[in-house]
Length: 166
Image 1 (cartoon, rainbow, N blue to C red):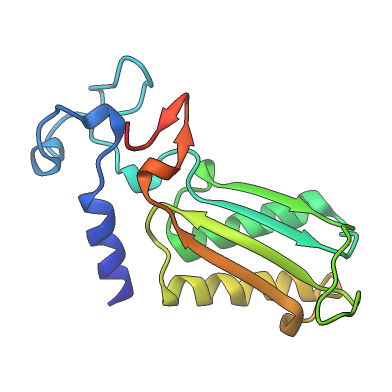
Image 2 (cartoon, rainbow, N blue to C red):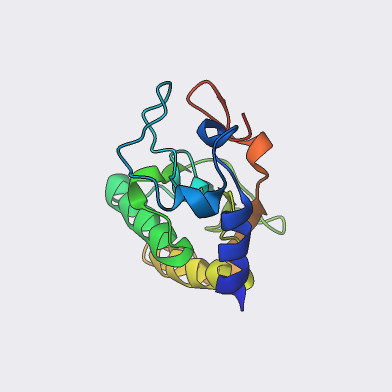
């Protein structure tokens, strides 16, 4: 059910390069060689899989052992859970930062995952399970991890000098 809803949300969206273009139904028949002159993006590109979407910002008071490997694993977890190409996923991790939870500075993490579409109970749960596994290897227990999930309107996501709404 959640996957079907995500597909409907994505199918209803239109990339800025498609404004004034034929409908998405007829765009599915357009060759991907028909590119927007300003962005180089195929006019029939699925707007839910364009660069800048999704992004994770994570803060932890633990100094990560291999930050690059952790970030790469988090990126792959987002790809698997949300079904978005990894080449469009951004991950920002602030480790060793000041953070208290419940008045304690014991290992903890807080973060936000933003995406145009694909935010749903099933995908959020899948991502949290993987992220908590990655953080547990760094000494952060799952019960001290908060992530807020945001399904962001296209008008509120900027990329390449404009928003996804135009």
